[in-house]
Amino acid sequence: MPTENEQIIQRGFDAFETADMDAFTADWHPEVVWDLTHHETWPGDADRYVGHGDILAAFAQFLSGAQTLRLDIHELRELPDGRVMALYTEWRREMGETEPVAIEMAIIHSIENGKVRHMEVHTGHDSARSSAGV
Image (cartoon, rainbow, N blue to C red; front, side, top):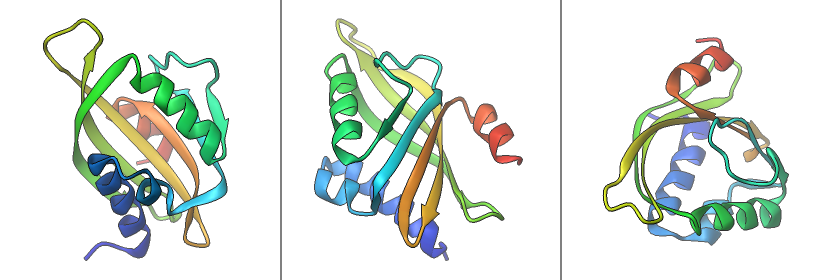
């Protein structure tokens, strides 16, 4: 049975799949941090965004150049320190491309009082495992 923190993260992934932005952000802390310092190909103008508005604006700009077709979650687990690590494959098609590309991605989520406080995004499962100490 998933832990409460794992359920919070699963709800976010489920909402992303249906493009329900209200549900996607429902479990975010008002000052949530989207940390992209470990995202090797992030095309945005910053590597850290704070708050719902800034994060959604940066995310929308990213999606205007690429289409994420689906996410396949391989592992979603709570770590001993309470953070939740999600390892997944993102199927993305860049503008002008006809075939999607599979990209290993991961996010380590810190949760504070039932709200996602920090999202550390990684390109590659090994990078996230190393950062998480597993």
